[in-house]
Amino acid sequence: MRVVFPYLAQLHQVFHSLPIAAQMAMTYPQVRVHAAGATSEHVDFICKLLERFAPRARVFVDRFDALTLRTVNYGKKSRLLFRNRNYLRSFDAIVTPERSSLVLRRVGLGETKLIWTRHGAGDRAIGFADDIHQFDYVLMAGRKIEARLLASGQIRPGQYATGVYSKFDWLASAPSPRLFENAAPVVLYNPHFEAKLSSWPLMGHAILEFFAAHPQWNLVFAPHVRLFDPPTADKYREFERYGVVSNIVVDLGSERSIDMTYLTAADFYLGDVSSQVAEFICRPRPCLFLNTHGAEWRNDANYRSWTLGSVVDTLDDFERTLERAFATHGEFIKAQHEYITDTFDLPPGSSSAARGAQAIVSYLESTADTARSSARVLGSKAQPRPQHGTTAARL
Image (cartoon, rainbow, N blue to C red; front, top):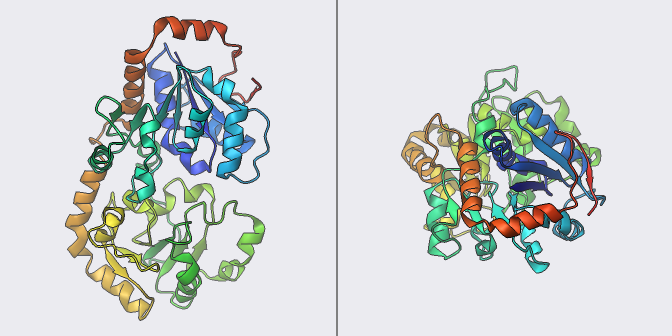
């Protein structure tokens, strides 16, 4: 059996499936596991993570056929997938954290199964889109997502598994680093990238100026990585004046912005619709949400996370708003605990990646057509590749 884990988008998605690939490689010797990166940056990042977290995992790391991706967008991802369709179709299954791979349905996958791991456990409607039924199998974190997808008919019993959020296997137990020299509370400002939903266009700079003028608070400005993707020197230039402000850290997309460093170190979450709040409140803490787009959010499943803290429409008397959010956090603890229980069905001490790997292998074994699978493997032109090596798949 051959399974590939492709990575086409920003690096934050790697954490949502690579632990499953590593676990699969270590647990199921009958499965040949590949990870394929769109760029050399992907390949280097994949290899680094495997060496750090799963050095015994026999995962073969490939580089997709040459196509320069200076920025990642849907159009270029589609071209990359089409260019490498024969390589991808040579596997029994493609396991992906993003939905762009559904474009492969247009060229046909034959017997190759398309499996979605998702990459986040938030509430936005995009995570429950009406094309999810096109995946052969879906992995998800818990009951909240399961219930919504079942209700919309996007998944069916036997074609999904819950209790899988592999990112936590590698990152959730990491110690919280000390980000500032002082003992002031640390606020994480984490605006979303989508302009019509994000607080950044209307409030972002005012928030940074507020914290620059109020040193009794520390601020980490770490937006969703797609807001400033790629985070070039030119994009950092507009934030240079905060480089000398001791209570502000600006991170537009480093590895720290995707490896839960700030989520574990912060005392307070300030944001809008990013799914990262679900990861933040795994240890309940105060939250404040910024409604800059006039959302009628109450009783809307797409905004359930806004029940985890206060919601404001303006920055009027913002210092008092922050103080009140800290002081009234006790009113939201029950809601935060319920949200986590509903969102993540992850038994303590268990391996989420192991459950994901087992679910995928069991599904593939139960649906395999042995004759066709054997014929496809015998006819494949794929050559053996070095473990943790970088090769070009030119098929």
